[in-house]
Length: 483
Ligand code: FRU
Image 1 (cartoon, helix red, strand yellow):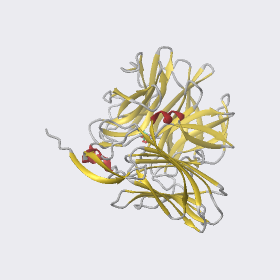
Image 2 (cartoon, rainbow, N blue to C red):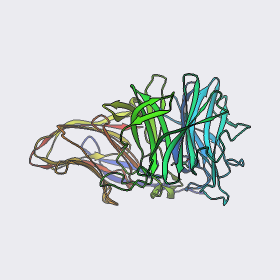
Image 3 (cartoon, rainbow, N blue to C red):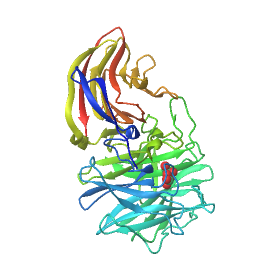
């Protein structure tokens, strides 16, 4: 087979303000391929799984169909890293095929116990051999070297049906507290989403404890996927991904959501008293966040940068789906804050642009491929809109802006409804933006609000910063080219 690579010459606005002649090796087949995000080498990917640290390496597994760009019978793909930003592919860790997982090795966690890295995952079984299910059970697989995994001989460790009723029964999260292991799982009980808890002394025999949190009357969804539960400061955080929330104004604009509740938890009585559900991200593509604690005690999470039933234009390149950059999580006044992990600084190749500019209208900056863009400004009273635009010369790729009139942040790809969320008083705006060949992650005011969306420019987009209103803004802009 021959592959043709088109070489052509174009004029581009570089970040030093000069017109520059560049030679682009433009392999049209790879225009959406990401530079610094985890994605499958080919085929389909969804949720992150088994985020862990074992023998000096971080491991992330992911839901993966190596044969097609659609979900199918999912495997566990596998990457590892020393620093959370440079990842290496390893062989697939789990392949479906046993009677208890023949229609997919669904999502789960990894824990380290003694010399083993142990995976807990859901075996999906469907009598009609589709990607639906007729039963779901929980299983274990062990590895001594962190590369080859052996399924436990007495799988499933938690069979179907669940003790306390319900149908969907998946996505185990396992952790240790004092001398006990706990396993929390998503479960659908009639039309109620909920999470159910099990306990074990030896990881093989599990006792059902009961419901840890629930939608009760279904008002918070009919199924809760991919739960994660951890202590942060003195509180407990439950992250989960409910299915079945109705859109409510600017809230719950995607098909499914990922969000959290915060509260107090008592292990002795399995009692969790918690507040309201808050969405974690306001872009189009953020789902199934999974977290771990790093050796230096940071709580770090990573999510699928995708959404069920979305289009994945990259599938024409033979791959679909990616993960977000890992994010450090903090709890401030009951609110979960997400910051890009500090290791992203290791990705900085060069400082492309660093200037204080005055913005009053549209200011073209430069064309960018894989970049971190840091924009800081003090807002003035008469500003109506402030933000940035990425344009690929064939048209708008994305516009992100603050609208002072209705006090919202907006991400508009020009396709479906813009994604929005409100803010209260703002005097200062700091945007940390991670742009990759087909993705955008925006962190506002040190991670108080995030927007994560896939975007699909046909070529490196031109960044412009703009404002509308009767005052000019002094804006500090720094741009780093990323590896
Ligand atoms: C969430 C999810 C999980 C399931 C997996 C299947 O995106 O639906 O509940 O385990 O994906 O790939």
